[in-house]
Amino acid sequence: MSQTPSHIAIDMGEGDAGFILGSGDVGVLLIHGLTGTPTELRRVAQGLADRGCTVYVPTLAGHCGNNDDLQRTRWTDWYESARRTFVGVRQRHRQVFVGGLSMGAVMSMHMAAQHPGEIAGLLLYSTTLRYDGWNMPFVAKFTHIYMMVPFGVHVCRFNEKSPYGIKNPRLRAIVEKQMKEGESSNAGLLTMSGISVRELHRLIAVVKRNMPHVNTPALVLHSLEDDITSRWNADYVERHLGGPVVKVLLDNCYHMITVDLEYRQVIDLSASFIETRVQAGLPVEAATDAALFNDLPGIDDHPQLA
Image 1 (cartoon, rainbow, N blue to C red):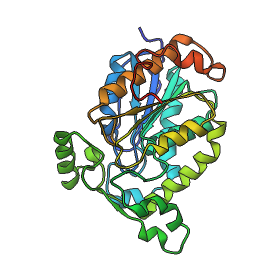
Image 2 (image 1 turned 180 degrees about the vertical axis):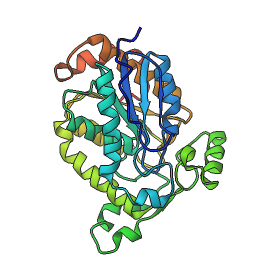
Image 3 (image 1 turned 60 degrees about the vertical axis):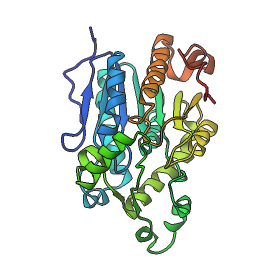
């Protein structure tokens, strides 16, 4: 039976798209991506809930509406949404893990920097530090430069295009239909404005400066076929994050690894990481590579463990 004080209210963000799954003692906060929605994390959240966690997936400020809603917000507003959820989760649970998809992974590292010693581990899915995947235009790598010139914010505008980060053709067709019909609370937005890109770059700049000081252990999952962000992003995290990192490269999915063909692998690796940390019972700051990862179930046999 859970010993957590369930009466504590949890802020799940704007609207009703956010959700809580499970009733276990271990709390997991998952953060969706830029222009994304909590729905993109539901499969993984359900999988972790089935493994005994309580999983919280809030809606970030400005999301699940239209582009006008999003452009009225800044990265600090997005982070504040996640931070408010974290505060409640931290009050309910003695051990809390934080993770996210794409920008959500970047924001998770920022949260670890802001709350040292309070997060048991990071779950970083398809971390996005630059748009350099195989389906991105060459100029996308240089969006940070455009942001430095007058009116540059009006030049950078990305329109989502097939395959939308999804290798699974059946799921891709469903998501494309939802996006084109304006179902932003389920599928997210088709367009990312220059203002949103600028705010993402501002967040990334802050996170990069602080990464060497983040000692929280991290599981980094990334696709070798990522159409939005190449494996360079995962490699960068591995090299620069201050704490122990295990990186696994998946080989049968695109950017949206939490819903695509290998989402079950994402669940298994994440659950094993969490279980190992919980069983170790070590303070966050005292953990070592060996204690964290040597006995991680199933991870030694993964063909793309890097």
